[in-house]
Image (tube, rainbow, N blue to C red; front, side, top):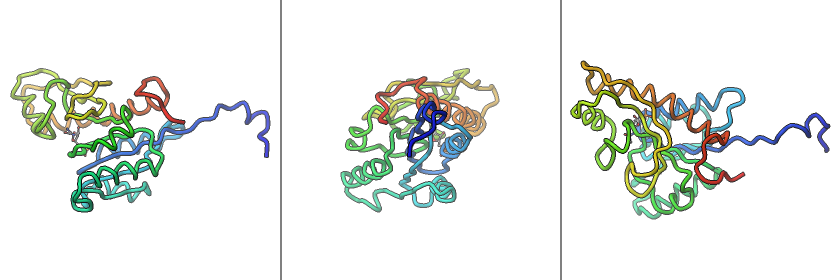
Amino acid sequence: MRAGPELESLPFVSKLRVGVLVSHNGSNLRALHRAASQPEAPFEVVAVISNNSGSPGLAYARENRIATRHLSGRTHPDPEQLDSAICATFVGHSVELIVTAGYMKKLGPRTREQFAPRILNIHPALLPRFGGPGMHGNHVHQAVLDSGDSVSGPSVHIVEDEYDTGEVIAQLEVPVLADDTVDTLAARVLTAEHTLLPLVVQQIATRQMSVGQRRL
Ligand code: GAR
């Protein structure tokens, strides 16, 4: 069947297919999925993988009928097989962009080679400060408080071999207040993450920001 002239003149729009990895709460996954559920959203969350079978993020994805898999050292004791299973899951769902959103494990070389540079991570501080091994969750916010810095905020960066080393593509600053505790600072940064991450993915999907060639 041929489309009428009015349909032929419409540009073909395919949504960017996003795969997400989570370990625990999954509030960034929820922020991404909320943004993807808006009318005209240029991306969709098509698969969620967690290393933690009890992750609330995984439960959220199941409740929202997103394809899910629990893949971990328990399901795949051999790291190479785990890497292959993660890679095959995302390839199987035709994922175009991977987001590690509170994923506390390293991605294996196979997944990185298949998808690089289209793998993003969100980190809860202004990289390159406060990144690297051991710098996750509350450790990051404690280090920021100890430093006396007056600003913090999330960074979105491209994932490379080492923790938190890839190119930073977006950041959002929030103030560090004199009476902040780890919990109050973490909450302020997390709220900023929920703004920043969907915005970055949206800009990649609409090609206002580029991370390598988007496969169509
Ligand atoms: C977020 O603050 C994220 O930046 C951080 O874990 C939290 C996950 O929250 N990631 C890291 O520390 C990784 N280095 P969420 O599960 O509610 O999205």
